[in-house]
Length: 109
Image 1: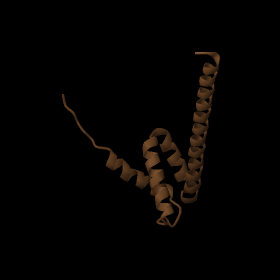
Image 2: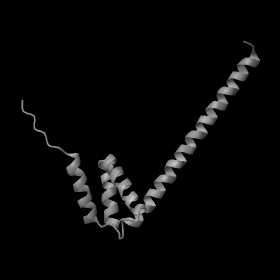
Image 3: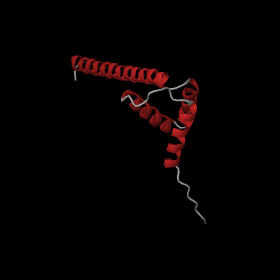
Image 4: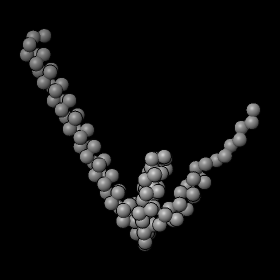
């Protein structure tokens, strides 16, 4: 290989890396935009105490919190939520989900 071929290969690699970096930045911006939209919708449908509870839940159990957030957003977008959700209502929703997810198993040895 001569110097020109090496330079061409380097140039192609550099262009590919730049393209990949731009795509990653676009994906990250999309994620941030979606997250901002979710927060705005949740701010509209949840009372402050309920939002705080959901934020704490997200720290401890992110998968459950994500599922609850998505379900609440779907309900809000379909017009099924008429008033803001209080902390007590959110607690009952979380209890229902927790009762479905947890199964107590006793293993004796």
